[in-house]
Image (cartoon, rainbow, N blue to C red):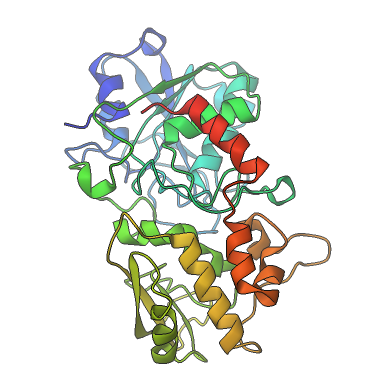
Length: 386
C-alpha cells in the first residue's frame, strides 16, 4: 500500500518537530488515504503545535480563481492565521517566518511546469534559507507518472511564476524531487528534509495509486485532464477558450469562429498517439469568450501511457494557424516584455516556427538531444528518489 510523506512524518515525528511551532504550506484538498486533510492531521498532533497556515494560489480553502490575489485571513475551521503566498507577497516574509520554528510543505503537483505550487515551494525554500528555519517537504505522487518527460527546456529569459526554471513542460518529478532540484539548481542553502513516499513507482499514474482523486485546484478535474494539461495549457497564451468554468476545462479548445467538426476530422487524420478529437460546443463562464457559444473540440485520452500532450497541442496549434490565419491569435510580446504565450512556451521562437514550418516547429521544440535536455537529465538523475 502506498504511504504518503504525511503518513510517514506523523507516524514518527522527526526530532526537529518535537515541541516545535510549525508553519504549514498546504490547503484543504491535500488529504491522506482516508481523505483527512494534512491541516486537520497536524492540528491533532501531540508532537508539535501547528501555529500558522500558508496558502498557495487559490488559497488555503482552494476556492479562489486562478490568477486572483488571495488576502490574509483567520482560517475559520482551524482558527489559525492563514497567510497568502498569492497576494501581496508570494514568499513568506521574515516576520511570518519569525512566528515558526519549522516550515512544512505538503502540496500536490500535477506534473507540469506551469503549475504554480512548485514555484511557491521554491520561493518558500529561499525564505527558509534566509531565516535559517528548517524545511520539510512531504512527498506525493506525480499524477501523470514519473517516466514521461516532454517539451522544451525553459530558457532563462522566460523564467516566471508559470515557469520556475529550466525543465520541460512535462517534467516527470514529484514535489519532493522538485524541492531537491530547486535546492541544487538555484543553490538554495536551506536545511531541507524530503519525507519520501513508500510504495510509489515511477510507472504509476494516479489511478494506480489506490488514492481518491481530489481536485488540487478549481480547474484540475481528473487524471485525463492532468495528462492533457502540459500541452493544452499553451493555449492560455492565445485567444482561444480552454473551457474555464465548464465541466471539461483543459480538455476542450474552441472559439465562436471555429468549426469543430472539420477541425476534429483534420486532427484525427494525424493519428496522434493515445488521443482522439471530438467536435463539441461549450460556453465558457469566464476568461476568453466568456458567455459565448464556442465551437471546438474535446480531446479524449484513449491510451494514457502513449499520449504525448505537448506534441498533440502543437499539432493542433499548427492546424488552427493554417485554417484560421486571421482569427486565431497568439498573444504577442508587450513592449520588451515576453508575452504570456512565450512564458508558457519557455521560448520566444515557438510561434514563429509554427507559422513558418509546423513540422520543423514540433521537431525542434521537442528535440530531446539538445545540451539543455542533456543537462536536465543529469540533474534529474541526481535528485530522483524512486
